[in-house]
Image (cartoon, rainbow, N blue to C red; front, side):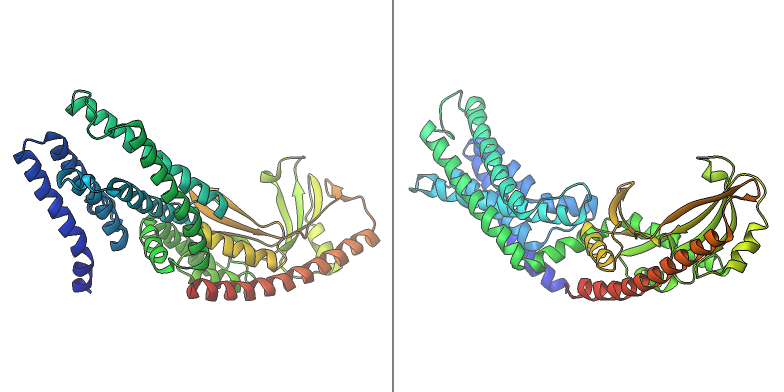
Length: 403
C-alpha cells in the first residue's frame, strides 16, 4: 500500500522539483518575473501537502497531479519560451482552465453531498462551473496585467494585447463550458464514482465531533435501557439505525396515547401526565387514569411516532428522508442543528381533545369511548407504518453500502 501511494505521488513530486529547478534557472538569468512566478507556482502545487499536514485532509493523487500539471504548463511557457510556439498559450489556458473547472466540479459536488448549507441541481452545478472558470481566467489576466506594471514598467510582456487577453478568456470559457456540461453528466452517470468516494471518505474524517456525539448518544441510550426508560416498540428501528456508522438517534418515540393535565393554556412544560400508553387502551385504563386528575385542563391526546436522527452527510439524510416518506411518515424533514444534519421522522396521526378541568369531566362516557376507539385505530395505523419504516431502513442501509 505504501509503495502504491509513493508511486502515485511521484509524478507530482517530479513536476514540483522541476518548477524549483526552473526558479533557480530564472533567477540565474536575472529573470525576476518568472523566478517569482516559479516560487508562487511551487507553493500552489504543494498546497495539497500543506492541506494534509494542517487539516488532515488528503486530496486524491489524481487531483494533486492535475494541479501541479496545470501550474507547470504556464511555468514552462514562460521560462522555456514555449509561448513562442503557435497556439501553445491558448492550449495552456484551455487545459489549465479545464483542470481548474474539473477540480471545482468535484469540490462543489462533494459540498452539495456533505453540506447542509449548499445545494445545487446539475443545471446550476454546470452554470456555476462555467462562471467560476471564467472568473479564474479573469483573475489570471489581471495578474498578468499587474506583473507587467511591476516587473516590466508597463511594457506589455505577459499581456501583449487586447486580442491576446480576449482569446485567453475565450479558451477559458470553452473549457469551463465543456467541463461544466459533460462533467456534470459524467457525475450523474457515475463516471467519477471512485474519485468522489475517495474525497467523501476524507470529508467524513473531518467529522470527528460527529462520532463523539454518537458515542455520547449511545451511552445515554444504554443508561435509559438499564432504567427501562426506552420505548420498546421504537427499539427495532433505533437499533437498526444506530448500527450504521454514519447515523445515530436521539429522542425517539413509537407514538402514544396520552392523558395530560395542564395547569393553564400554553404551560405544557408544567403539565402532569395522568396516563401514557404506547399500545391500545380500553375504557377501564382511561377511567383509572382520570381518577388522578386534580387541577388544570384535562386533555386526551394521540401523538405520532417521532424519531430524531443525526447523520454525517446530506446524502445520507436524503436517503433516510426518502425511506421515511415511502413508509408513510409524510411530515418528515431535514433540519440543521448546530451545523449537524438531522432528520426528523414524523407522521400525520394526531388528536388533541379537551375533556375536563380541575378533576371534573365535561364529556359523556360515550364520547370518551369514541375517543378511545379512534385512538386505538390510530395506534394500529402507526404500528403498520413502523413496520414499513423498519423494512425501508434495512433497504436504505443496503443501498448506501452498495454505492
